[in-house]
Length: 375
Ligand code: G3I
Image (tube, rainbow, N blue to C red; front, side, top):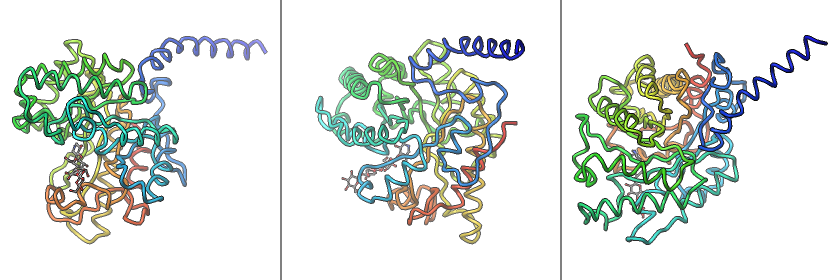
């Protein structure tokens, strides 16, 4: 009896010790970093028949999907998305060209529709993206200097304020670093000097102090790559100068012709996490067009590459979520002729479900990655 009361009291004490930390989480929409609540717990193997979201929940990670409003007319689309995923990213609906097509004229309707869908299905929302050189509204491309900077700050403020309290994470600045590690040369924002990035983060934070703010980029998945080193220098400087940056987004648009191993991915994610940043895999897809062999062999290799990327995330405590960049193969941007060539000869069949919404081996790769114990 005395022993049980001692155990009970130490449990209560433990819970109270956690309370302030939990409060901090509630204030800023901090993800429950895996294992933080109970250090030493490795990820839990998925149970037979688990949905992706159930398997992810066992590891305290989020498993997300990029969705596009125009595919909702297919009933199977929202159904599968809500069943398998607990996080969503608007594929295009929160980008500048859509949200502010004319100066000061805002159209949040498509983005609002996706947020409402997420709320109805207990899905987290990752906002994508506030400042990006692509898909800019035409009027922005005519601006420069102070006019460009104030338009950028007004856009960030208005968009983050509109979604205040509804967005867990924002990709505040997307793809600002070039392949050589310096600031991107074909971005109009680069002409403002690198200070524009810190200003964008501060404006987003002021508009929604509860959202976690991320820098997001691609081809940074290997530390040896100059672009990865450039992105590291950028976020390290932002973090050390007190800019409200909370996370690093690795897009994971895999290129099987040249892609890092599990060990290199793990080391790269750990390197950025050591800056005190949360890590997310934000736009994962694996095109099979250039993978040699039969379709079966291509899909098996796709599964292994997916397992390694997801497993690398699960092996890093501060890596809190994985998002697939689309629901089925035909919804993938790589199914669109204008983009397919970026990954060589197609078809790329880049996602976890086929055109008939049936699971592919890649889906099993996600489950296996989530079940990888942290070693
Ligand atoms: O909205 C127009 C529509 O009115 C028109 O009928 C249709 C036909 O041309 O095009 C529609 O615009 C397309 C838009 O997607 C919406 O579907 C654009 O042509 C097309 O270029 C655009 O592609 C998007 C691409 O970003 C633009 O750069 C992809 O869907 C989207 O998956 C892709 O996502 C990016 C991330 O945001 C950032 N990281 C890389 C990733 C892949 O490029």
